Length: 425
Image (cartoon, rainbow, N blue to C red; front, side, top):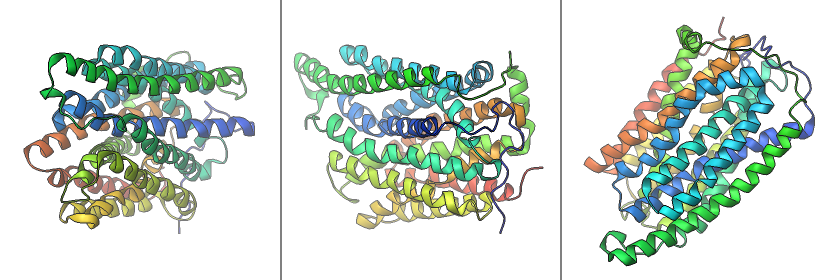
């Protein structure tokens, strides 16, 4: 049995010194927070769909706005991290996230769909900077040989956030949703309805902004506690040239497919489970069940942190992808409770995919780790495009038929896992 591969034998952008324990804990807490904020999109989609009488395709523009930010911001973020260091980069990321949350207040005041999309775009830009900094940072806070395991463990706390936030967000954001079609209301009543429902969203994100600002202050205080060597400038063309390396190029494609599949399923879960032929529950009850989807990912990551120390990460990735594709296919071809819980179980299979793909993609990059991290985070734009495709298929057929899209994604990622089963040379 092969050990987890050496993610970096020389990552001199971050010297392998022992980080203060408190700092390690707070970095792990960042994974929890951005996971929770990303999962709140699954709550916003049915909320905004109902408020603005949107089709599935239109509702998926929520994810398009959010994940397009990754594509636009990732490479500049990699450049930024290389120049200012990981901890200062985290401060900038948290500040941008807080700004995005604060933009929900004017969005709520205007009660127009496009302003909510803008707020989500800015929030995602901050999360992008945070990911570009925090993923390689946590991977290098210890032995290089166990980087895949360590990043998977940190991602388990990311999944803890995605498990806890949806039920709370569902109770707060969806709990006030009236059983009316706003499109059928008189203009004055519709305006009042949108203002009332929008205010609930704005107040929730105002509280989140306050927490993010406090975290940014903490990291600014700790900004000089990790030794880094910085580059004065990084060429964007040079960054893209890294894609010629098969392992990194394949990793970017796999991240694109994985995030697209995961986000697509998470985005459709509330509407999928609420169907009469699946579980027939209310949207608020379905929001609570999403915790099982993300909770499975959390459990799998804690288990995966151990398994990835014993087996080839590439082979583990391929096996979990085949499991995810099988469960989604079983759900799409059946109905009732069995179909609902089969799709929720895909979360367990998703568990190790992102951190394993990320660590495999960064193998052997050395000083160019920030650029590689930026490129991998660019791949997260799959969360913008694949859900739109799923929405289009659902509008033209059914949500069950739309599962064919993420199934195809998982099978393609399995090919990458098999090809990456050996350590990169």
